[in-house]
Length: 60
Length: 443
Image 1 (cartoon, rainbow over the protein chains, first blue to last red):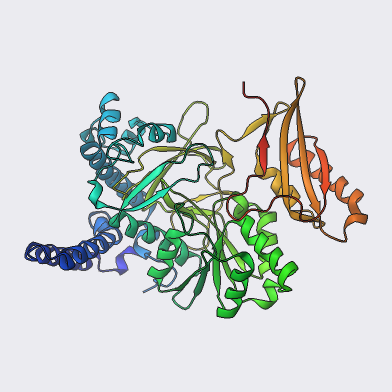
Image 2 (cartoon, rainbow over the protein chains, first blue to last red):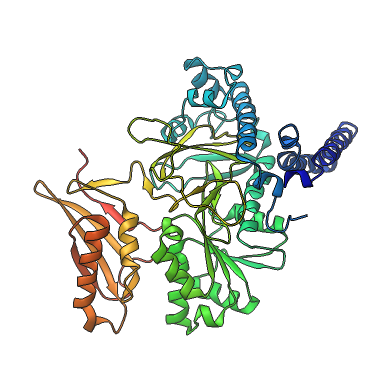
């Protein structure tokens, strides 16, 4: 069943999301409304890593 | 794609050898994290002469020292207050506080970051999706939202699935039942004791037959072993006209095990947790099916206060049965059948309190409530079982007594003093029931 899914492509998009969120926080100028929401986004991205990215080198 | 059965078809159907590879990688990561960020873990592992680079194979995990609840109690109340030096993140990153119920002693504080809380909900999402919860469900949660973790995680897990969640917090039992009826709730979650208690209240005080008058068709139970005791489960399913699914979790661990819709046993979520079963006396790893031992568990992704090789003292066994669902997550049989410090000897016989519940709930003339008292008379153990007759069953008391004596002898190997009490006079519980009282002097 693992082969049915584009794990590599998904993991790449997850990485892009993470980079984008991290970059957003870097340029936020310390605006709490940005930083705190980015922290929540990063927590959700971590769940995507657990569900997809962490399996990348094993499922293949 | 055949993703409809699973929350995550990639993880849930991973071949066992790949699952083990994933577990090793994740264990290495959480071990290194704790070693580098928690003074408690650093000292524990340094004293044992083990460092992150020493975990190279799955067998190396066996060398890692266990953590017991008493160790957690010993460090809490100190800086960083109140969690002590098991904490792996700065205090300002902690967003959630909960504590254990204190069933086995002083409650343990549990810190979680927002990421941990996302993870807790994620782990619950695996549970609920496997039990058939979907976005169309309207889920009622009849528990007191407070410091105990109880169904907090289920609330957020159900939201993650897209369910509509109704928080039935500070309502009494009657109000909760009426709200479920009013809103046509389709699912709920509670302890087995409260599931039975609610049905009893609905019938006696409101004239509502839950199976007939309510639309609850899925119930997830946790907090007590009843969901894996066939006679208790049967009573719940009949009372509510619903499927009842068991789940096991703990404040300091997370939601680690669950029944799926096939009810073949409880799957261990082996993508998020490593469960090891050890011989109670020797500590030897048990891999064979059907042999009971104590559970040692690791949660791979909880970072604020990691759970690594936690000696839960829960007694479990790997099931020889297979599940039709297709998940490769292994099954445990009968849920948590006792605790290493709870399975006690009475009159020289090992007694698991769950066996008594199985018998009481198998006899139709008895109510759902019971109480067991173990005392000492001189040098001899004495065990008393208090039960309630359902109104109208008084004339059958001798038949019921005979069934009780026979079944208790078969299931537990013991003779009991039996007391029949008037219906409604034994204690009722909303959360974890305390029906087994060992009043013998401690040696």
